Length: 271
Image (cartoon, rainbow, N blue to C red; front, side):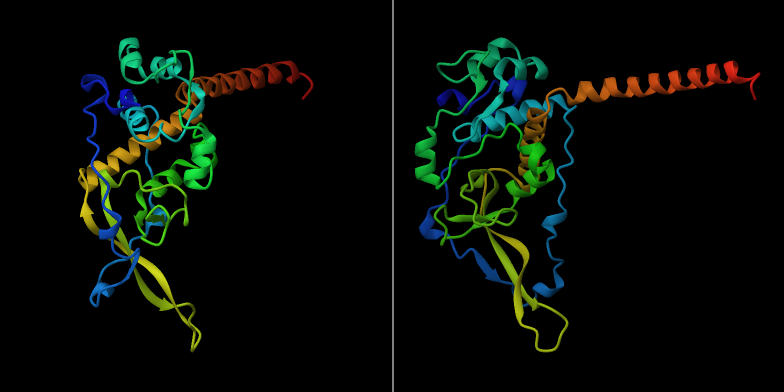
């Protein structure tokens, strides 16, 4: 797996350093009550976050491939994507692909699969990590973006973390060295407008416990590139398909106009 730790600087950008995770003993509670003056702060509407990615951005796809090989391939596979197909589409030279992306024992023509045995993964995480070939198509890129951005510290969890988009997820916060460790802060509101309605906890905002190696803007770009790459993997031909589709629609419109003119010519004496 050491080959996945870095990629060539010129094409794919500088590899991101891996920092040690925050020790479990120093992590505070997963949820905290909002501070006294928190009412003045606008609540974070994480449900409205959008990925805003573009699979036509080749540089973003290259960075996303780097991110996936550095942080995801240890547990997740892309069983419908070959290394060489990815390299051809993203204009990655064969030398770079072979030296930095292809797993030991694999060839350029192999599918991208994890080396983690499914049985071991099930024992460690409680379930086998899913293949991510079609995850962007089944869950949407916006969901993936929100999922990767809403991990928070939870010492009561087996992974010491939880997620707003997917509560009780078995996946640990593998990007905490980049983003940092954060807590979810909640506020109490009435469950309804009825008199005597009980109070309930509603998410308000995140609070940073310890910073990561990236700034918030850098981490946001990291997540967007990763989601962009997964969007490409789910439909590698989508850019070409959309481009061809535009010309097909224009051709059909022209053909329809000619057919209508021909019909009028044939039927002009009848009418």
